[in-house]
Image (cartoon, rainbow, N blue to C red; front, side):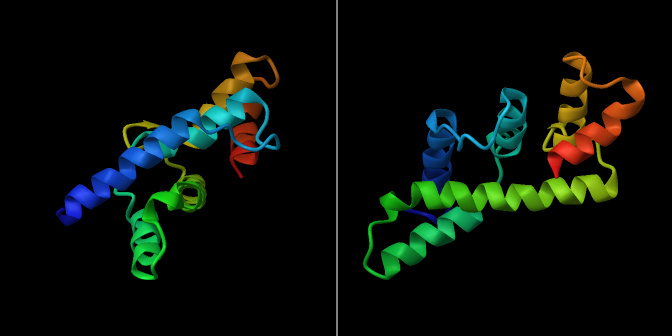
Length: 127
């Protein structure tokens, strides 16, 4: 299997897990869970989770059992991207709205904030 094939294999496992994995109950309400899952759902190289699987295999473990930790690593990495987007005031990431923009729009849509407060609400929720 080539390096790219291995990355694709790990990516596929993570995509399936992301679709079927219920995040901890602390990730509520639903619009927050949607924002948390948005970045990893848009793809990426998945190099960090792949490294985790490869090192597990190199140490004699089963790389197929690293899906949950790989997903945790990917979510942590995406958290750093969310902070970067807030600092840079970006509105797009990987072809979609940034997390803080999505959350600001959710606040508006649900009537929790007005136009003026949506930006602050979105940033605070993303952090």
